[in-house]
Image 1 (cartoon, rainbow, N blue to C red):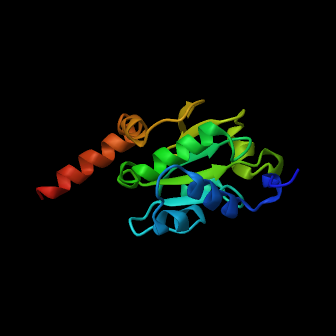
Image 2: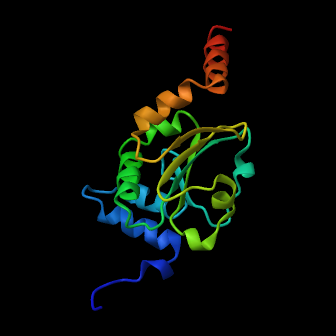
Length: 165
């Protein structure tokens, strides 16, 4: 079919850049770079699932995994828009975003978390799954969910306790 691109054969980094560029708002250059697996100046990382192991982030970062069966999934597009609009909510909570839109590739992340269709999965620093959602969530909602975890409460307490010392 003329004018139709077979996205199933595109590298995930190229696909993410294309999806972010197609969103109905201006994407700053640093966010496009983040979609390619680099850090933006503020530090938010958006990584393709290919070659990523959740254990790499134990006790260092929380991992927010965005799954979809295709990068054309409207829920995936909406979720990426929400993430790129307000990255600060995630940055403050030491979150790394991992994206997997290729179920046929069977990434280690996909094998471990076993999503069905679109899924948003939050893995805390201790490796435990703290959130699973079948629909997009705003970064504000994700941040609130993180803030309710015991590990995050301990982080907040230790930071506020060290300020006065």
